[in-house]
Length: 631
Image 1 (tube, rainbow, N blue to C red):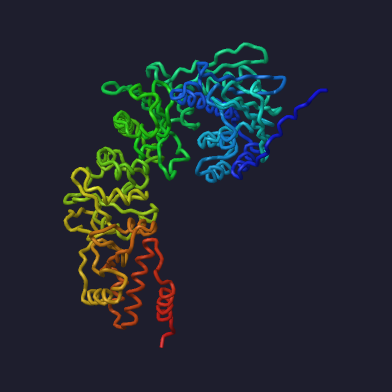
Image 2 (image 1 turned 180 degrees about the horizontal axis):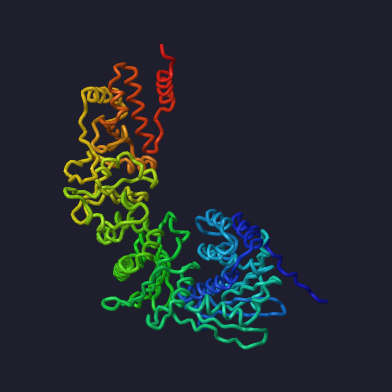
């Protein structure tokens, strides 16, 4: 009598909603470059081999056979399959669910919205940027099977899906799985059968994965011998003179997971007390995780070519957009990730790499201005975080910084250019901070500065409101907000274009200012004549001490201020409307006018009247009086 053993039943799982949505786009969208899937699978395989090398340092039994890391790509034209297999760390059941059934990344929704909106030619680049490359397999596959055995474990599992909303997870016999590692089997669509051709696949591997640090071998058909496609040599160990621009770009794409062209690379070997090699890149597009809450970098740390971690802070946070690797022999292979952060070796490396990257950016700014302008467009707001955070390099970062100004709204100017062109008698670098360039350019607080030909920095990034007040000077010149304190324009020498007038008030205007000061005392700290207005009737400024207007708004919006200081209302005594108001002797009309002027100043700053109902009532009374029939 023969006994039959039932095959284990597969577990059925449903993809997370975000994964299902992404897979739907992969299966049903048209892409200009489907080759992306192979590079992503090879990148994942290389990472698995690197993880094994790292874990085997403290647990040698994981690699007891001592087999060198290898990636094997197998083709079968008859079965229309492409297989990518590695002998890396492998995955347990739980790891397969986490890695293949979910997207454990922030910003998923934003990524998919951008993916849906992108043109067909841009989608492959977006896929790589976000790092969800495994799912790109479904662009070319009717079904994907993943067989994996975790190093050191006596069980193996198979994950299988057609990409239509669910996947099966089944335990399989050990002899059907790799000794350790992962085998990804793509059952290719009819229109994707070209990916079973040796020359096609070999060309893709050489072009897109030629510098992964693990050898790649290819079996062109069942029963054939494996041939080496790449040798797994680490690009950063080669002399710069032997590396082409295309090889640098290929390596950058592999280490960053992006498909753009890098704007700059920094490749050097440091020798001395500590020895290490660095190969770092400035991306040509903003990485998706640039504004993640943790704001951490993505540089990879190697010790003697063994991957250790990509969580080590090898660069300060204001350089978190830089991608690349650092390889050193001065750290022990078995160092824990916790101990790395406290290591004096890492501190020295961090200082050295940071200095070299900033020096390279300085060279770019001086010699390749167009390229540096692109860097600043993409990452200027991030670099300026360092002005506030990194006191040691504050001056260096200020020299690197570029700004829109009242004389350069189309281009950008350096602070050195600003200081060189300062007016005689000008002792401060003036700035105005906000969120909208057009609104800043139209700010009434700029009128007096324009009249005297004084350049003002136009700061539109949130970080500007923090570093500018905190910095005492640049090249001996202090930073001063034009929306705070007195304008102090009298000391600046006038030129032929000066159209400003001294803020002298007639008796009527002086009396109205006194009246307004009393009427508005609940909402303003003072009402005074303005030296900064030449056309507008009013503007608001912050007191001399404390945060300026924009910083106070940011802190208030974030719940960081217990109370808000009262602003100062400045009035232009030469404005015709102000003169007419001042001549009105009716107390009710004067009170309405004072409050309307205050609300006008708020609106000019982009704010709303604090009491819309009262604002509307006052405006109605003004209209009724202005348009009432003559008696």
